[in-house]
Image 1 (cartoon, helix red, strand yellow):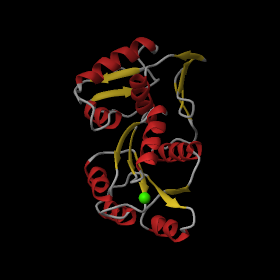
Image 2: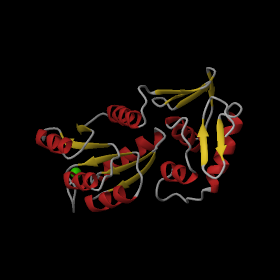
Image 3: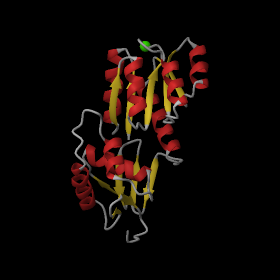
Image 4: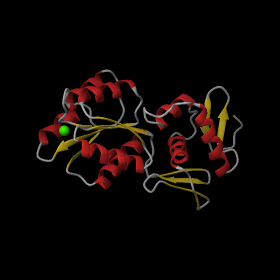
Length: 223
Ligand code: CA
């Protein structure tokens, strides 16, 4: 899952990026409204954290323009605590949630998880597929109750597939949602990681759908 952070306070921007990366997300960041708008308009993010007070283009305008051009990713706005009117304007402009500064990182991460699972139709932080259980809060994966050790790239890949269980996910979609914009996006790396994941997961959980991509399914159907 890939997140865009648009925040002009450099320290806060860095803290957010680090916390989100530690939580298993791919993260891009922008420090002004124009750059943020452009990234959100051209890249397929799973969620955006958007500051309201931004140089070059304010957060409300950024959000309004995204929504006008049907960019429907979940957006959490970051507002100043005493600016209740920003919260109202942000929600009316199409924000899904807000967090008032200063905030606890844990609260922000919890709100991110809520938006991620709503957007993918899951009701809890724990997603199951056959014997596999993924806890998006602790970033832990178990198989029949036994913990499976995954690298951060393997975790990202499995988390994306598990959020979209039963659906065919193309290699291009995986590349776009697992890596930040600076990553060398060679779609062959996806095959390598799929191969590694398959060795750690039981049987035919990750199916190859020839010419289309991959599907995570517990029903064992031949693809
Ligand atoms: Ca600001």
